[in-house]
Length: 95
Image 1: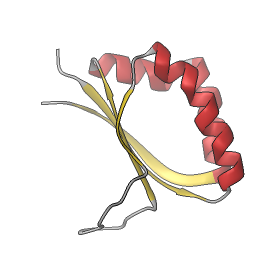
Image 2 (image 1 turned 90 degrees about the vertical axis):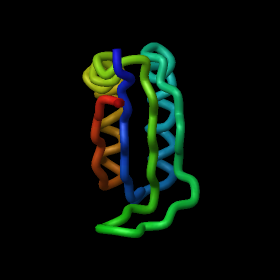
Image 3 (image 1 turned 30 degrees about the vertical axis):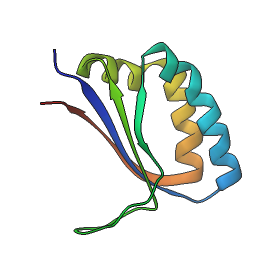
Image 4 (image 1 turned 180 degrees about the vertical axis):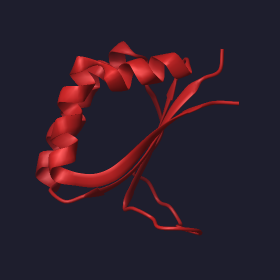
């Protein structure tokens, strides 16, 4: 089975509140086996619009990546993120 990946591009508007989101994601990310490959490091926007924070998480399968996102625990965390940041999350299947 192909791995699954979350690709997130985020502009944080309220850094202190965003910390609550990061804390709230720990349990669902552990439960679904999320492995951070990139998390807010240096980047160069070479095409298109860029956001200040970029995250790539790897999951064992595409289905686990979707299940994590749709889990009640992550959806509670997502509400925090949506209240203090703007961004996009894509879930993609690996090659």
